Length: 313
Image (cartoon, rainbow, N blue to C red):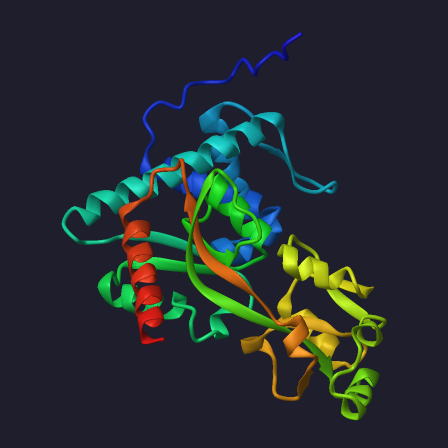
């Protein structure tokens, strides 16, 4: 039997500027996980946030969330409203940006994501593209986040990200991937790792004497060639961030694979002729979602930067 809807429920009618503000407050509260956590994001106190959410509930005619000692929890109506409000705000921002772009007056937001440590690669065109785009469209707010490849793909799919730069280990049908450059990775050991002494005695140390040591693993999907290498090793800790992986390698307790540009000079590269491998770093965008003019303009500069670097060699 279908649940009865609140009899006080009313049609929203025309959406006002005040409604838009309340929508953004509600989304901030949900994304932060509660009223208290949203105070820093919104710049107002908890009581003000609570009052604004109450106003929105009155406007809509139903309760959006439970709040109290048990914590912040969305109601069923609140979950449905949140999904629709996010879509509405996203569409509104895109409309504003596209209308402004007609006169080459780009206004709006650009949400980009990259995997950690990839910006340190001189071949990565993201930073030059951001610098150039900032000069081209100074009124566009550029938001840059660092996340795992899986999370970046999810963000592009749900519309929270306009594009993402990530290594491609698989290709989802819903996304379009364009290669930017190749990233080379090597196997490394910290100076205090016992393997280093063995390598000093024998630079061509047999593979089985290397793979008996524990290796740092990553907590997300990786390339097929890298996985084949890793399957030969004893499994060590699992991490999500390159920085955490580098720290464990520096500690001298584990071996690990790192992009060459992320490896410090005090790490020892282990048998590069055996373990070196490369992965394609791509920019991914949604296949089905209409691309905003802002995202299109940035993507164009990103690809031009990649092509320019490739020509230089």
